[in-house]
Amino acid sequence: MRRTAGEAVPGRVLLVGAGPGDPELLTLKALRALRRASVVLVDDLVSDAVLRLAPRRARVVHVGKRGGCAGTPQQFIERLMVAEARNGETVVRLKGGDPAIFGRSGEEAAALRAHGVPVEVVNGITAGLAAATAIGAPLTHRDHAHGVIIVTGHARSGSATLHWPTLASAAAQGLTLVVYMGVASAAELQHGLLQGLPAQTPVALVQNASLASQRDWRCTLADLAATIRREQVASPAVIVVGDVLHALHDLAARGEAQQRVA
Ligand code: SAH
Image 1 (cartoon, rainbow, N blue to C red):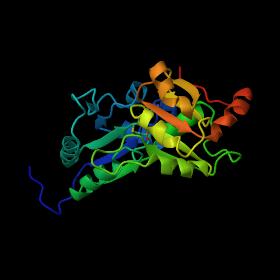
Image 2 (image 1 turned 120 degrees about the vertical axis):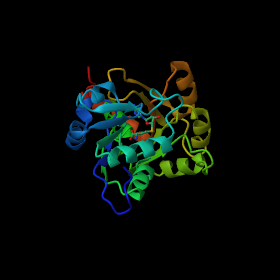
Image 3 (image 1 turned 90 degrees about the horizontal axis):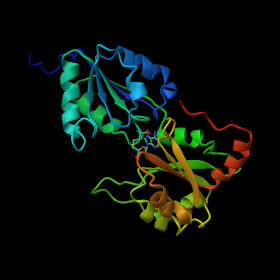
Image 4 (image 1 turned 90 degrees about the vertical axis):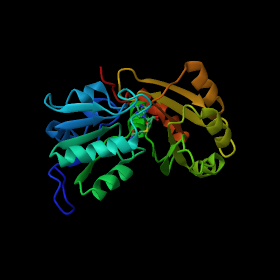
């Protein structure tokens, strides 16, 4: 049945943050949304443990690389969400971390609203925050940092690329850098950052933060790319750069680093 302009769409879409993987890091709001879902569209980064919380009756569609060859095209996902909402479904679009941090929630929400589909965004704990906590690094420890820069190491093709030396100068003022999607471009990132930060600046790498499979490493900025190569650090991983990592020793000694899920 074709819906005419102005006619209310009976369903709705919730863009829900699944957090970094540990289901205990889901918000109550995310859990409630998931339990009410009749259709769940899942990204690759959503852990199986979180997905198991979806109701049995819900139709689950994998729209990441696991579900379609090279990642299901964005337009297809948007069309699917619109169609399901028009059918009266409660669609949960489950995304790793927070939907608004490198999660395309802005473009998806705009596309849905343009079709008259009611949309709600539900926060999740973003990977960088979970990674830092998992290794016991307070990102804004006041002895070491005034703030945090969350940045992607993987600029969208065609868009202006980041100028790492400028970012390094900003970080040298006392800002912690948290780099997402930076593993593949680590050599370039290291080269650029070394133009504004000392070679001995501490770096942490956290792969699969909050999951039982979590692995993490410490190195210096000068060793970043070599460490990634040697240890075969793979995606998903975040890179934390800055003096707040000096605080790790004190915290580890007090046993304050967060436990991982079994
Ligand atoms: N919306 C997500 C980020 C998506 S971009 C969020 O808020 O967390 C994908 C990148 O996120 C990965 O390349 C990696 O840098 C980071 N990431 C996601 N989950 C992660 C995890 N469990 N551990 C470490 N990094 C993770």
